[in-house]
Figure 1: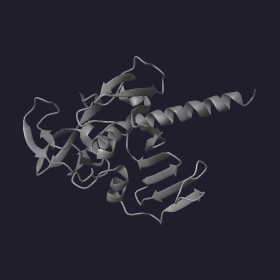
Figure 2: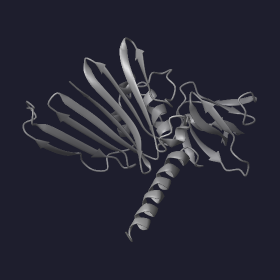
Figure 3: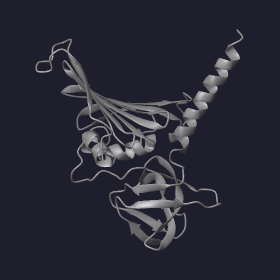
Figure 4: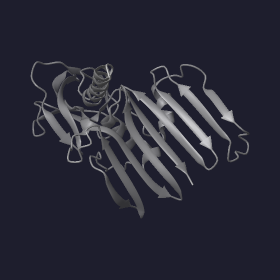
Amino acid sequence: MTHKPLIMRTVLLTAFIFFAFSANAQLMQGTYFVAAKTGLSIREKPDASSKVLDKIPYGAKVTTIDEDLAWKEIITENMTGYWKKVKFNNKTGYIVDNYLLPWAPPKLATIKDLKQYLAQSAAPAAPKVVTRSGSMNQITESGWELTKQVYKNGGEYHQFNAYEYGSDTYFLPGFSIQQGFLLCRLIPEFKEVFGEKDEFPLTSRTYKKDEKEFDIKVIRTNNDETDNSPFSIEKIKISFEDGAYYEFEMYMQDNQLVVFFSGGV
């Protein structure tokens, strides 16, 4: 009985820290990279109707400028972001931070999956580690193989193979769930999950696309189904069938984004 208040305070503190990481990952001042394919307009004022001063190309590095004014919110494609002050080509203006990533975005002509993107972003920190059970030349029902690779920027890639099943798990430190959506939409590996014109999912639903049925579950920290804020989202889970059964998950683990993609019969 005497330990319950301490346990409760610990649980509440953990929940608060989790929410703070999720909510503020998109808000911090710093250096980012433009991940809008057509570039990002820098405007004279923090307003979508304001004069365009220049166009910042895809992949360009920008550093946000701190200012005393309150940030102005903007929603695009269901993503909630803010107008941030930046300097580019000797012009100072405002851009929408919805289309910024903490790492350089994928090279569109060459990057086909998230494993390649991790390799683009940083060199391996050590040789990959492989653990297995059974022969991998002919995986039996009890055989499996797990490969792990860690990169110098803290990213990780885990690949699991078993009998008629396989999964890939990616860890991206410093990414928010919204930034994960933006990144996955740029990588062909996830074209079935997030199409180029798909908006950020805010609610659970079932829908059909290309004759395939997709089930999206949006899980929130507050369990409030009427909440449309992206900052209370704990996990996005998408499942569909296309010859095999596929499952995609994206969620925050402390300050890193986890992307899980599996397929099997």
